[in-house]
Image (spheres, rainbow, N blue to C red):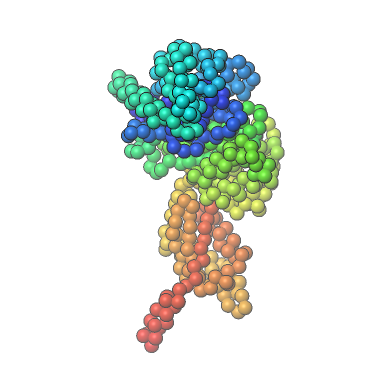
Length: 490
């Protein structure tokens, strides 16, 4: 554990014992997808938690069933094992109503072979009179079980007291390790800005390119979105150089929005792997519906949306719909044509189709998560787009641009009246928002407004960045002041 990373507590157990429900309850939110069906959680999902002034991180994991030998179940088990290996303590969740099962004993055997402190959590004790059900789990040999109800919150306060103590112990051990290794130079992680949550280290891959200098601006959040089975999770793993998220040929493998932090070229990035986006009418009432809501929410809090498409199929209508969703969310957009090693599409045709259908005119990059083609370039372009989305155009320069545009192509007249633009200023960033004072908004034509937006993108390299342009009518007070000055001059 690095000195800047929060203490981590892995939440593990047999499938369908309520791990995600418990993690949501302890963290005070609803970030993890919860459903009555078993096997909903597949990836590791980090949830920040604070209790009595102690901050730590819960790592929700998929259910561990060692009897299942299919590829997806094995991948989920591997993710849970990695969560345990990286954690400072473990919370083993069991179903008190179902009683002690062979699967619980198998997970407990794995934990007994390690040297991490373990808390046994007897979940689903929804009635106070059922607390005796927890006694059976003394047989696991991991100490006294904590009876709780993740659904109703019974017993979670005492559990949080115990977890906070374990988190404090993990922080103390980490500081001791740092003191021992004080003479060794840092290699992969950058210095931690004050108040940030920290970055987990990942060997290999692009993580090795991290700089030791502090990031000059805020973290860059990149949401990796797209329709199902286009290689979003494979691309995230390629960025990190490790199997951070589960990858499968089965469409819809990813269900949670998984945040992963990394350093790249001296900048701090937060990658968000998301579930595949479909039309809501097709997934209503299913697990995929709730996964989709979290994907849309991830795009809403991102600086850049990396829209992944399948190069063997080209840019489809569903890809265009996802790109428009990113535009409405207010984040910059970069289109990645993945699987370029499998099948190539006409790049010029794909770019032309995007420019015709999407106002943002997002840049297009070909890549391959399997071979590593252009993988670093995607991160470079994402950082560039995030910086442009956060940039500000000086007011004098913006007004010169508007005057030059009016001189080259004045707006068309309506009923003998012509639109006049008096003053322009950028009023917001992330995304850029401009206010332009005009004589009469009714004189604005759709075509000329698009012409203004497109020329603004070209002049300041804002392709892929959403722009908001407000045409503000000149107030009567301003007109009266101007006419009064004219009368005085006479």
